[in-house]
Amino acid sequence: MSYDCIVIGKGPAGISASLYVKRANLKVLVIGKDGGALEKTKEIDNYYGFKNTISGQELLINGIEQAKRLGVELETDEVIGLEFDGEYIVKTRNSIFKAKTLILATGARRNVPTIKGIKEFEGKGVSYCAICDAFFYKNKDVAVLGSGDYAISEAKQLLPVANSVTILTNGEQIVENRNTDLEKIQLLEKPINHFRGNEVIEEVVFNDNSNLKTSGVFIALGVASSTDLAKKLGAITNGNYIVVDKNMKTNVPGLYACGDCTGGLLQISKAVYEGAVAGLDAIKYIRKK
Figure (cartoon, one colour):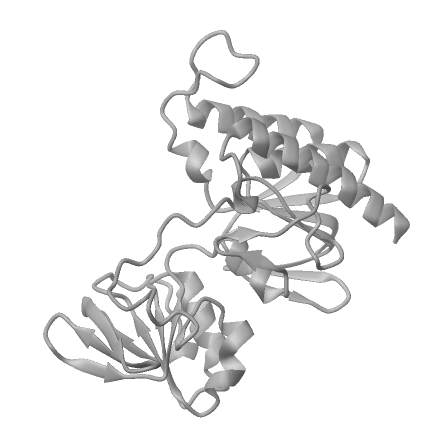
């Protein structure tokens, strides 16, 4: 199904953007797996318009209900991949959607791996984007760190290029819907002790002192963040944040980012503002097209 705009993330930034796009009489879809950081916030006292304390979950539900009332379409699903073929292609666990513009608003990554060797080998065998770096591992043995659908999606990206692909769950259980097209992928659920190598990563060492030789490890913990998704489309990032201009535009035409994923003040008010700016500029872009 095709839309004028797809928003990834149903927190305050994403919902704010969708309201403006919808009120411009355009077709907009919001995709989100959960409510992100806001859903976990117990008490909010510093957001305009509430005389009493409100919980993050209440505020999240209010925003979603407002969007539904205006006719915004919402999909509860996990985005596992993005492509561009003249339109943006958004792949989720269960569906594929297309849109003229795309707004990333899934927040900032907060689950950084703490395994020894991750930081030391970043750019030296440790990567955060399979579609970006798969080419450099042609006919080599690689591994993907993660246990969810995002990790499985990254492994599938690597499979046609690499000699072998191993999913490392670091002691976690792989998601239940692991399907038959992954039979060629090795699975190791043992806890990892550290990564080892000289100038580049060479092996994974487990807690039981066994090891796995590898030329690369792709980090895909949890759900893909906005930064992970932006990299797949060639957007410029700075650390964990997406680089945008004053209109929330990335360097990729028709691609926007707003909220925590752009850095700066990690507050609801800033997310709502940036969502509005992104939505308004997306409207201009769509109408020019």
